[in-house]
Image (cartoon, rainbow, N blue to C red):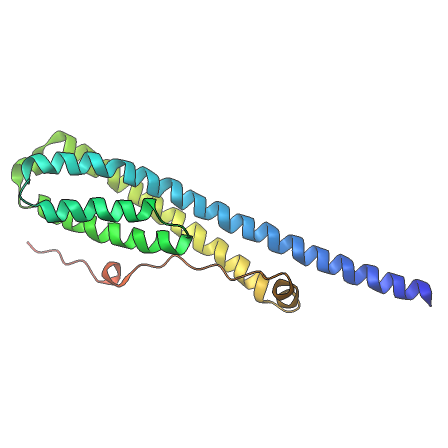
Length: 181
């Protein structure tokens, strides 16, 4: 009888350890995938000062737009959590859209090779950010599913594992882009 109790306890303990280790592994994958987004966002934000300086020479009286881009960049740099960084990212996307819309008003700026190069490099980074976001969301979904499935949810609650947020586009990014000829 004593051996049966010990075997049952060993199986239960093994199951708890297995679920706990699975939660840790999946949570670390989420953190890793977030850091991949962070790397790409940093690349984007490193391009911004060069872009702003290039535009400044052509559109110095558009100070508010340029200040909004820098302000949004600084908000990201000071973000403390992934949620703060996600919100700051949405701000910077809106500010960059306004900056590129502004560039349409300045034909000399649109023809500037430095501006064209920076714009192309930023487009490349934006593609990588999109892929990294998708990977992060997939990883967060796998973690959240594993955490919420019974009996894993019991163990996750005991050890205070939290759901991971999804990276979502803000309302501005959800609107269709209008192209006018």
